[in-house]
Image 1: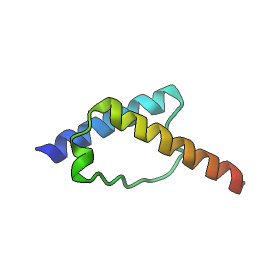
Image 2: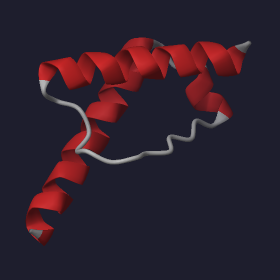
Image 3: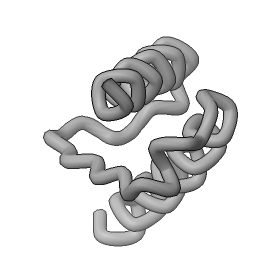
Image 4: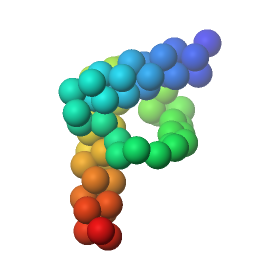
Amino acid sequence: MVRNRTRRRLRSVMTELASSGGGLPDGDYLIRVDPTGASSDSSELREILVILADELRSKQESSS
């Protein structure tokens, strides 16, 4: 139940970020959430994913 709720929250945040242009660079990703992350609300998950997406984009740009 908690796993599915967390999965729905992540999917919703990722869809929102992709539509706003702030999503992750193209690719396949595995996102692992530990038990403390499962208790996070959507805004906390969004904040973390925005930071990760920014880091991935900057790494991708620096390697190009």
